[in-house]
Image (tube, rainbow, N blue to C red):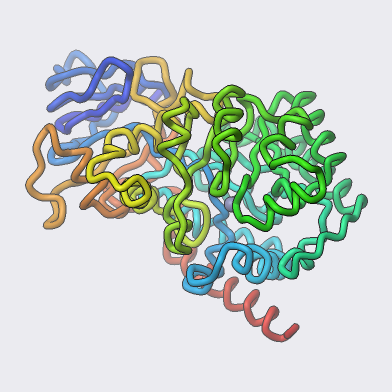
Length: 450
Ligand SMILES: [Zn+2]
């Protein structure tokens, strides 16, 4: 399928190191890769595209990369935003994860991917139960997905809410085996759009022995590791009581603190642990929207000041990267008591290039440059909340005033998966109906169990 697509007429923000934007510019795509990016309006006859996307009044960005998501948890939408993290994770999410059947998980994953693609996400790092069902949804819908193989843990999660940590070695064995089975079953499928990353759940819900085995398995397979790190003080206190060291020190001791590690949250991280993250080249998956809704802000700027790479994640309840990026600006400004830092362009860079770096994909994702995979997000500014717009305000207007559904078009690997706001790869009405039914059924089952 050697399709040639030309995007022309709009502002183009390649996010290459040496280019800030073309007004107007163009992007030429061939066979799933970017062939050329440039300024001006190209000669159509010379380029001879099979298809032209008219981006007049719009801006063209690298496809957004959502670095941390649990799409199936959308079943808890409107219920899990008004409680603390420990209650949310162990009181609400653990029960819904137990309740969801593979088919219901598939329905919720499709809803999550629909929302993400509708709001500009081309790549997601996705973690859920029944990852086979999630992988199937990703393969069918055409999103690029890093499937978190896990969640690996050997602490019985049901007790953690009350601060009880019961270790069950067979649970660790089973969750790690399930994780590696997923990689074996799905590696190479989805036309190369599916990637894998091992997902030990958190520093307090895996024993030291299990952490070491996860590290070995990741090295053997040549895949990365992602985890929830310093998500709450209970995690920190439990790790210190059990191991006599802080969570980041534990990760170093078990051999996973390196540039293949993507750590979500890092909310209660110490200065010394930040230094250790920077030295090791570990990456932050910053999830500002859900944290802010629960009253907290992770230290994005102190980590960035030390040179830690970061990407942006929506985490749970919302898959909207525009919302997540806006929270990233507002939350950090409140935390740092700053009227102007971080800048919108820096946050958009994290939501694209930073995410690609965290995935080890800087060579072929994250920016619009010749030779890279053609993952593209186009935003329409012809709306009352984004008018007027000027060459120097496209980025700040999107992040301060835009909404996710301003995204008109998304390409993944040069395939148009969203066109003029319409999902091209599945039936949107069917996705919404099935997700509503699945959430209804799972929640009713939890209620019946009492
Ligand atoms: Zn998470």
